[in-house]
Image (tube, rainbow, N blue to C red):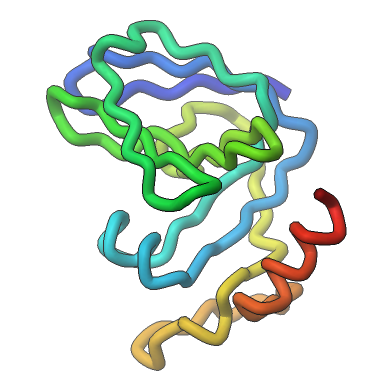
Length: 137
């Protein structure tokens, strides 16, 4: 499946491929600080093509990840997991006809009480997420 997205000012165009229409929600404090709420993202592995990397700022938010945004308009473009060479794209950025489905939530232990998603999902705490990545690595 393919999709594309553009930042608000049009300086950055992303062409992406994804194998699943599953959306993940991250409730970690960094994502909530960065996004202004939880991050709803689709896994695009390493299949992201960025039209103008000079308009992208990559912020190293941890030893294992970068967060990318347009340095002209500030649009959040991706969360990039360094060890896995894996891009997670905010699902709202993508322009596609794909019917996305919310399937899992991570850092559920950091989710504030003031919002709740109604559908059933697979939920993982922060400790479970880190344990999962240690098993894969």
